[in-house]
Length: 451
Ligand code: UD1
Ligand code: MG
Image (cartoon, rainbow, N blue to C red):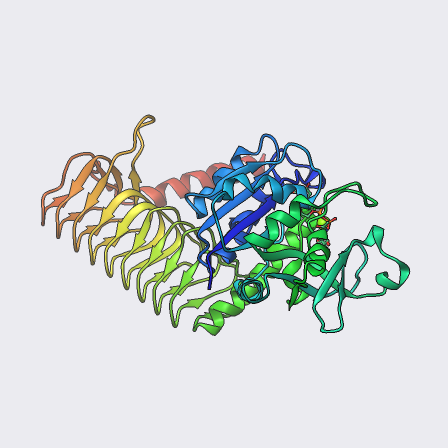
């Protein structure tokens, strides 16, 4: 197959989003709409990529480069139509020969399979159109076919006759064509239509007239859901969550209440992982085989080792590296910390900027005091350490292998291996004090009531 270049149209501001941010940067499942489109296209290994942006949309170009580091941005100063937008990308693709795949930045559910089918057909026929059977064709361009079933023209709603409007086979907007065919035809597209725009779709009739009618690829309408407002954005989120839940279950994870679990597009889940109800995976989480994530956990930028047990009610923040078989229990927050294999922090702790060695037990209420108001400091705890409840570790501080820290200790100096660290006022006991106190109080109360 010939080389592929992609052009993503993203000049639309998305006024109905009511946002200071360009529409295609809004996120679903932790990834921008543009990011979803580019990740789908990445499966085709495009040689070049161009994103067409409007004025002041440098952030869109930067987002494109986060997926394709050498993505180019082309500026469309004025919105003169989809054909005009594609022409803006031509200088960036100077010298490229092959198949050009034109995508919309606000159609994030498109699958790599549909794009691959379209690119293959374009490779064979010179030009191919991705169509769909519309439930309600209103507003879409209609695909008009010749006797052989190839697409001879695309008619926009506003320019269509009533007979053409009865066609339910519609244009997705996604088109692929060979560079040799596309550029010369696009130069010939005019704007004598109801909208006064340069329509990319007019290229199809010009190609047919030149003896190259377009091949037709079909995809489900669901893949073509676009985003114009935040209600549609939430619809995309919910579609993606449905896709990811099914994908992870089919790959061998148990989700006891799938409808309450939220994944990011990049979440990686191993086999025989069990995920309880109400778990949220932010970006950048990897969970190894056999781990259990109990109810009400929030994970982001974290790696959970094989067979580890997380939660219920745990929070893993970026840089949390949980070793195999380790336990992180309720109301434990871990940030930028490595927890060794088999180590346990089961209750009410904050472990941040730390290393916890294998086999170490972190008692309830342990806090790493990692921040002095200006800088973060490291707490380094060795292997098989016993950290008693309610310990405060004032970083930077080191605790050697096998050491014990008594409950309630504020650790302000390094603790050598196998040592005991204990810092607490001595305990005073007064025999019978509590009984005497109760009797005295009760007698006074009784005297008051008699008066
Ligand atoms: C377009 C198609 C129509 C198809 C429909 C599918 C044309 C002429 N029509 O119509 O056949 O059924 O999409 O949704 O192509 N854009 C730019 N610059 C522009 C104009 C558009 O970047 O000057 C971008 C938009 O941001 C959007 C996409 O191109 O992502 C489609 O533009 P839109 O105005 O929504 O086209 P439709 O009229 O819906
Ligand atoms: Mg549209």
